[in-house]
View: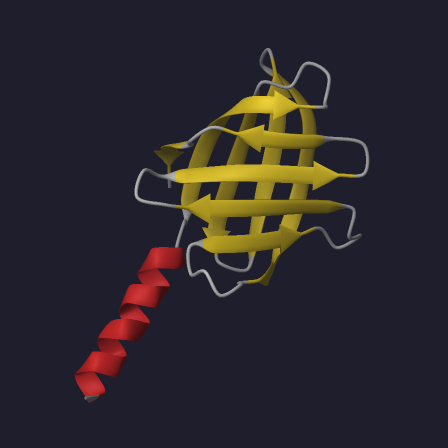
Length: 116
């Protein structure tokens, strides 16, 4: 029984882990000129997002882990000023993200891991 609980804890920890650097092509955006979102996460508690358009950085923001709902494959992050929210969903294909701020909303297609 103890090993079953430990296995479940390890599975949960690995299923929600997304440490690394991910490049995500944008499928819809209200931010003029944006074409890519880069997610940089080196720990579970925070992540840096970088939104670029034609190679130029448009937005860089650090967001902190907010909560995890009942779906173990969904993670929410928010900025300290509570003006930027990032929703990351992980499924059998990969990661997708949604970035919401006061003046724009961005949805991405599946992200490609490009580094650690």
